[in-house]
Image (cartoon, rainbow, N blue to C red; front, side, top):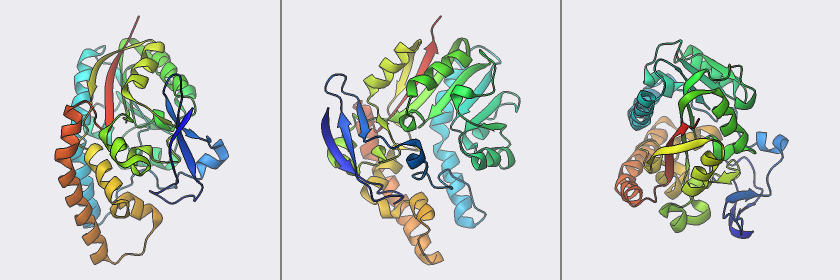
Length: 304
């Protein structure tokens, strides 16, 4: 393997330990080195790592923006659902507070969430009306073939064994079911330009940094055929570039770090970050059009 870059937790500041990002000399897969042990890794995820909307005016505005930028995710998944077995259930793995499933607007008996966090699953139920369980997909309390469609947005890069998750999804999907996965794309212009400062590396929480070919190969080995790809996410690509350029303005990072801010300073930083996100859209659209967007979203069909 060869070392590509090194860094620490620049986003949330949970550790000062330095890690390497290395690339295998054979398969070219990129990963974090050394890989943290599970007990250590848990400390890199703050209790409020997932998003929980507050009750203030600024929080309501942020929630409205999150719902707006989720539209391209929702549209992508709805198109996949049209090709999936009719009338089946949908499972969102890593559902957080359940906003995505709420925006899908499915009957409650057809939409389910799964998350490692008990608090996130609780918010999915209480705030967004989404039935959610807490646990790992490999031991999820669902029957084989129970779902027409499974989604995983920014999940695989956090796992020690992503193969096990994709294989578990294969078993839970009905015949000809659909799997939608999104991960950061390590073969993007942003990584080439910014190296270890690229927000998509998210050291030390991202254990594997996928390129598009890595993801397609993984899905093929686990019994899936990729039928559609998308390199742009309105929710993730511009915001990711904004956080790369000005991590100190990232609203979630500031919230998790519990930085002392007056209401006026908080509003000023939020507006500056929002302006930077808007300014990042043209560049992120261009890199996506050129097949080098900072995220890759795929729809895969379960093969017989």
